[in-house]
Image 1: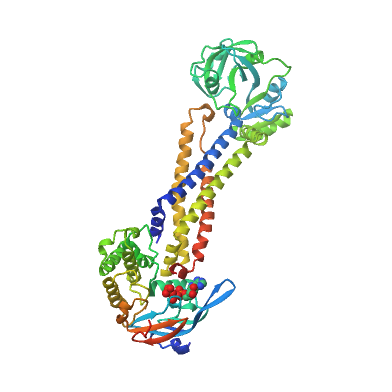
Image 2: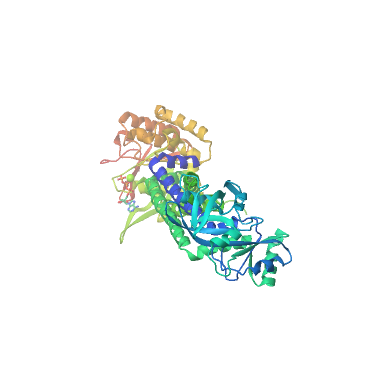
Length: 377
Length: 247
Ligand SMILES: Nc1ncnc2c1ncn2[C@@H]1O[C@H](COP(=O)(O)OP(=O)(O)OP(=O)(O)O)[C@@H](O)[C@H]1O
Ligand SMILES: [Mg+2]
């Protein structure tokens, strides 16, 4: 009987493709939008992910994220270093600056000052040059998104910049996760950064801490808070803070939520309509089957198999479409490092299931109600 | 406990009756009005006979045979098919009863458009759970008896009306049901095909423990009947071996 159900469905090519298209479209929209959403808000944590060696971030109690931070007095560094369980602690500065390029363009950039001695604070991998270049005078390292933004199609190595009226020379490219706003990032030594960033008295943004026992980072952060009166967050907590900040302070969740909901609704509409048409066109056949001796339970199973087939094919196409989309745009810095978290295909699978269950149930009601005798009149 | 009661004798049903109806009445609701289409039909259809049901259009023939084969509930009355009080069965049991015991040939064939003639004819066997290829083989054999084995691989829309009807007939007979019910089986066929279909029905559907009831207007085949019933305005007005004047 299930074989017959499938033939009934695929025999009506137009409606079959309509159904598959509806599901594929919904899956694509939901999966793709959720993927972009998750990856985008995770960018709120890029500042933290880029410094993977820091177990704990210490900051002023009012600081909220790696980009929304209030400066600390430089004495904070020694206070943190004296807390038991701290293996190392280094200064970290993050500030905004303006850059004038050779062509006279103005670009807002983020200047990140990393520890002079250990270079902790630099992204792990370099795309060009080595981190040693920072020991040369006026050196900065640009991130790869900055390269594509400021120097599209050319090498930035050796380029001179006017950074807040100071001379800077790009001597390397870092492989970094872009920030939420895709701002150009220039890495330099802490001591150098103090020159670039015009001075208020306090300019230390964070103290980055390595724990003696990284597994105990949480306990260490609590101890640091107790003993220094500063705010301390583990790497994971601080990453989450960055993500939460974006969720709370932008319209992004709402916007993406609307698109995802639209994907669902359009799916229900297309699939619901086509499914109802399909069932209505076949109501006489279903009625005849009922008269011959097919129980409502078997009819339900037949329709479930039809829905399942449509769901499987449509969902597969939708997910493949999303993969191709992400893959096709992976060279675009906006989509750098985008991945599809496993939960998202699961969410769209549930959505597809709901769409089909809802529309299948609506369409099926007529079949189940059909009096066998009525189809022979 | 105790000796089983012969329930088939209740209400005057003879145990050997293939179909027995007692007081079958059927109303239809047309807006505010209630139309009574059948008025207390008492009938015994005997196994081993080809029974014809004739009557004017609208007299209630389709309604009556629908009730007799378990696809339309009577408003009042009882229907026994081979001793089973079919409208006392649960929904699923009734469906199962139809699947095992009843073949239908109706005015509308309702073939499944996307599967070929042989598979359409095999539907009852597939529904009974028979392996699809085995079912198809039996269906092709049945199509052969109906002289359209050469059309077995064609889709319904590639067949003429008469050929489609023969597929529907094959579907009704393929599982060798004990009761075959036909509504105008020869209307779409020429005289010789019509007679061939009737011969086949007699072959397959009429036996000692089988019954066949046929609704027809087709006076070309009246001579093939063992028994002819006339329905007028929802009442049986004639029961004999030939047709009264005027029909
Ligand atoms: N589902 C229904 N709802 C309302 N009225 C119905 C319904 N089914 C049948 N009727 C009415 O019952 C009467 C008998 O119908 P039926 O189909 O049994 O006649 P018939 O003898 O088979 O006629 P024909 O020879 O034209 O097929 C008709 O007046 C018809 O309008
Ligand atoms: Mg009729």
